[in-house]
Every structure is written in structure tokens, then in C-alpha cells.
Length: 460
Image (cartoon, rainbow, N blue to C red; front, side, top):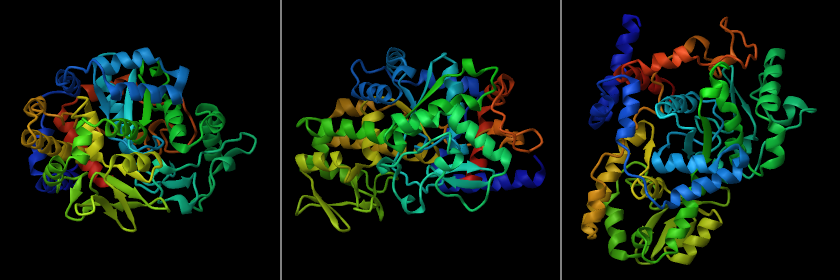
């Protein structure tokens, strides 16, 4: 790194820590990435004997991937090692922040030889999000699967699916382009990728919506990030959309009169405590940001921010209101006219089920704040034992959701999709080698992370 680039990186980091002063200590680890992986496992809490979350994600995995995944092996991994990734947006793994975090996650899992990279990816983001679930990054351009009019729809609510017919070729999966044409090599590669490798025709026939297709296509795509010589050693990826899992669990908890979620929503005193204690936390609500408990969904499938109106006991949003009562909430969740905020995601996954969720830069910042507010709330409502259970840190997984290392010599769309001369040749045998992965394992975490923050800030 030359002196000019080093100065730019230093200035970026200084600015980053000025905005997030409490995070500096979380980015300091006195060892290598391999040692960091061991630290992650040592911080895991004792697994739940009976886990509604574990049961639900296994059901969702079986529904979509069926015989591709052993439910027994998945249950055993999640039971013994309650560790997942929550760093991703639900879309094809063609965006650096997404596939990079999962490569790092796979290295952590390799320490225990675990079979699955389990990712709970949020579908709350629209098709036009920076991670671009609407299409496919390719040679600096974006090629769209869905028409422009759908770009604002959250992935969770997209009823469309990718069609694929080998006889019709590229046009059968790409509905409109950026206006730039593909050359012959690029067209040949795209057809080979989608029809021969990702089995788009199978995805077209067996899955009814884009979200389910993403789970299947990423399962197929994942191994191609690695050199063909080591693919058999790499854990499979299970890429499940969080919204399905969280919403189903939330409905069950709302229907239980004595559940914590029911108390938060329907007990006036407890509800007021939570509304107050979580105001101002990113991913929650307050000061013109976020939405209280749920997001409303308009008839055009756009988000509506809710605030709770005490006199009418109603969640109010622009042109929309939902009574804060058991049956109306259940019906609204089932009809997808409301979606739970991240407040409920982490209440269920991390603060109830004790799963360590590897996350991105924002999560590393807001999750400890949520933890403090839960502890404060539990004390105020008399659940002292529950507060004591949350004493240990919950945001150890700082390494995912960023770009902590650099293999840019062959990166364009995806590392191995390009020749060493920078010309696109559609070669799917190349990828990250064992020596490259070993280099990451043996690199100091501080070096990886500080470089990663700088690179992430440059593209995010």
C-alpha cells in the first residue's frame, strides 16, 4: 500500500470511529483469524433443548431444499453450535459484501468441520437495494430479472419468479437490460451459469416465487466461489429468508396469552416500557426513523412507518391503521399487510433463542444497544432472571458483512469468473484456493478488519 492510499485509509478509519466511538474495542482482536474463529465458538451460549426457531428453520429448509440437505445434520449443528449469519440481504450472491461475509463465515465453521453455512437473510430490502436482488452484477453493469416497475417492492413480497428455458436462451431469464449488450463470451457464460450450473429450468418449474428460487440458486452457486480442487471440502450454504421464519414464530407467540411478545404488545404498562426504552436505537424506532413494532405495507407494496396511538390503541401510518389487538395483528401478518421490524427478529433469534448472529457494521453497533435496553426493560417489569441471562455480550460476530481481505487481481463479477488477463472467459473451475484461504486464516484480525472497514466504506 503506497503512502497516499494509506493516508486515505487512515482518514476513513478516523472518520468511521468518530461516528462510532464505542465500537473501536470491538475491532481489536489480539490474534489471527483462525484464533478469532475459536473465540467465536467459545462465546456461544448453551443451546436450547427445545427451540421453536430451530424447528422452524429446519422446516423451511426442508420445504425448499428437500433431499439436498440432511435435516438431522442441520438440527445437530444448530443445536450444538447456535451460530448463524444475519449479515445478508436476500438475493443472489453476486454482491461483494454478501459473498465475502459468507466465505469468512465458512472459514469459521471449518474449524469445527460443520456441514452448513446457515444464513438467515432479510427480505425486507427492495429489489433496487445496493445489493441488487433485482438482477445480476456483470462487468460493471446490472442486468435485470424484473421490470423497472417492480424495483421498489421488498423481496419478501415479490410474487414473480425467474423463468428459464434453455431453448430460448438468455432472453428467457433477463427481461430487460441496462442497454448494454453482452459479447459472445459473456452470453455463453451466462447461459452456462444459469442453465448448466444453477439449473434455472429446475428452479422455474419447482419454485413459485423469487425468494424460494434464491435459496435454491445460491445453494447451487456457492461452491463455484472456490477452486474445483477444494469444493468437496467446503460446507454447503443454506440461504433462508428471515421474514418467513420470524413471521411464523411471531404469529405463534401472539396467540399465546402469556408469551413475552404478547406482554410487550398487549400489556399497557409493559408496552410503554418497551416503546420508551427502544426509542432512538437503529433498527427500532424514534426521531423520524424506523417504525414501532411493525411496518405497514401499502397497496403498492411500499413501506409505511407506524406509531402507536394510545387513545385508539392503534398502530397509525400514512393511510393505514391496525388495531393493536391479537386477531387483527395475526390476520395482518398472514395477509402480509404488515411486517415485523428487526426488533422482533433479534428478540426471537438472539435474546430468546440465544443464537449468536454474525452481522455487519450497523448490527455490531445497534445489537449491544438493544441488549442494554432489554436488560433495562426486564428489570423494570420484574423479570430479573431474564435480565441476568443477557449479561454476556451478544455482538461478537463483527467479522461478517464487510470486506476484510483483498483478492482484487481476479475480481470483477465473482473472482473466478475472469481470466488472469482481465478478459471474461466463463471458466467455472477456478476460484479461491486452499493457499488463499490459509492466508486469510493466518492474517491478524486487526489487519483484516481495518482494511475491511475502509473497503466497505468505499463501496457501501
